Length: 114
Length: 196
Image 1: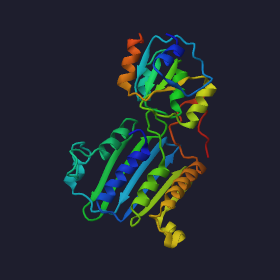
Image 2: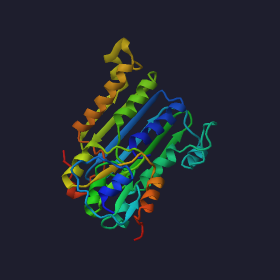
Image 3: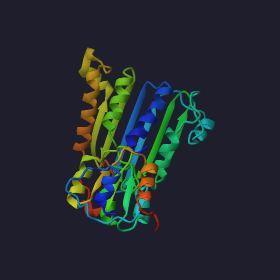
Image 4: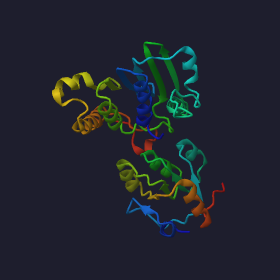
């Protein structure tokens, strides 16, 4: 499913207005430990996390992730948003907790299989 | 806890519960050694050697209202997660010193967070206690000392609501001025740290 459609169906708020939304998302990964994401995420993953600081953008760039989804209503830090805009990384927000949003993503066909 | 400022708040609140009249929070960033050291010292009632051994146990607490005290174990976990560790030194009747070390630029090192808010909460909520915050980054130092603040504020006092915003802003600006590492800067693609 395209990122854009996922965002619409799950009511995700896009915090980076000019980021690309056409990527086809097939897989996702969820972790708040950056080293874990670096080691275990795969290209194209939508990353679900509660971390908001600048380095989440670096991880997304290094691992070619399709986007970052912040849970529990977390707000990205201002410098995170700035860098995400520069690196064209979409960052979404949801008020839902991780378990719930990951469940809904899975129902829409997004897999966690490596 | 996602930020060091929250860990520090928790540890300092332990000091206050131990009836400390003075609390020192010292943060050192050594870029050359890739080291971050966070130290909280107090002159509270201290702990026996047996208690010191138990404080890193998450099911140990001095508060009857809780079944577990997680401040120290959480900080220990946060430190060990990124190549550091935690030490607890204490003497009964003298006070306690907690030292947490971190690899400064480790991927999983918790960001510093809002130290301004942490200090504003501690100071305005406990105007009778003396706090010293010292943050050093390779030779540059930011200091906030309630003894000095008392002299400047005079009769207004540290408990005044206007003091909260002042402290918060002073710390935030002070840390920015010395180039404090608010989060690990491991990744070159984001541009390296500006070396002061």
